[in-house]
View 1 (cartoon, rainbow, N blue to C red):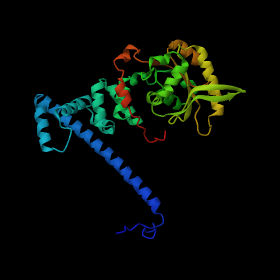
View 2: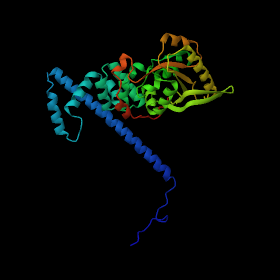
View 3: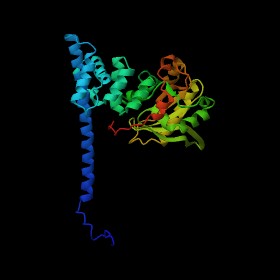
View 4: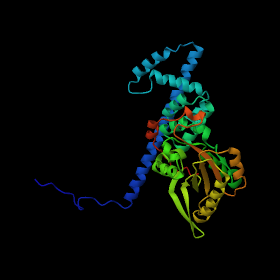
Length: 354
């Protein structure tokens, strides 16, 4: 028996405007799915805070002991067998969560925007409330997954963000100067590189290119890689920028120059020259902000770095980097292990229009 094959005569003609309609409908459905997921997460975080707050209140006012959590877990799991989250361990996290955040208003306005798994990581790893709030705001702003958040905590990002020596306050207008300072770190931690990367600038450069994904994770959200040893012809001579990026939130080109030794003032003069050329040859004045330069050095004297940038006309930052386990004491215990770094997945967010 022969099978009937579909022909153009058996497929009804699509009405005019149908392709556009189905595209629009799919977009609305996906948008509704995202909104539903956000709503569910918000209600779950609020519920967990309320349960934790109730436990704290009962223990304080009525003298309930810690053992009541075991009974509460058993009763809730029996009543809601299809619902996860009522283990003894999770109920203790709820109590700890409510103890850390006593103001329901901040829970509703800020904390409910990230997942419960983010909060567990914060409760386990960050003791200071101000630091917790900083990481929550950065997670909301950058759309970090839990794995990326854990990596940022373990690398001590709260102490490194905005710590670089810069001249942004005198070379960039507000708020561009503040935004630029926030996205640049000091030190950068390149623990994904081998020790051989410090033998020469060429080897450091090559190692970063080979580990570009990890490099971008450390640079942070917004850095788009343009090129390595980017060629500029200036006055009939050839010059090469070590690394060229475009920052999607700062809306500007960023030149990174790599140095394996200590910072010396001559480095700033050369980078100033590169930035002048890039502003003329790469930047579109109608769309792009002034180019920014970052000098990445093995070490620096902060006073010398500040003097070197004081009268420079172009926006620059001077930061250090660390390879392998050779870290300052404040970062030794915060270094993530190799397995965690391998598991990090970059999570990008929709353009926030900034």
